[in-house]
Length: 132
Image (cartoon, rainbow, N blue to C red):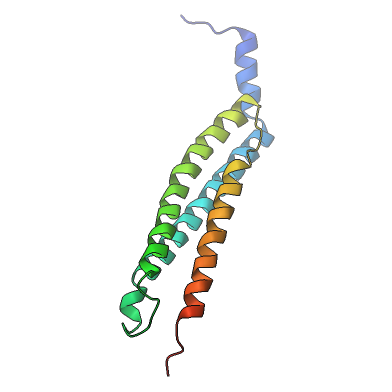
């Protein structure tokens, strides 16, 4: 009934059975899962920071702004999920098309954002009084 040209069929067969391609897709999936674990960790830290004011007595100065750091960290965790999902499918298409080129802009963005949050955490920890 339907006949596929022999060249197209051979190319599809070569591409689907190429062990290097399979390794690339598996590496892409592992990277995606690592980003998901990172985002879950960020959201967990964000929840902890947002609830910090309930864990530390209200007499401690400086604990009122921990909710802002918690919100920022949770937002970064949610944004990580969106970006890594988009990146996963983009890389999947690039691997199939044999045109993969790494992009550094998201790495720079997330690293910078985490440095800011880390600085805020250190500041918060330093201004908290030592409880007896």
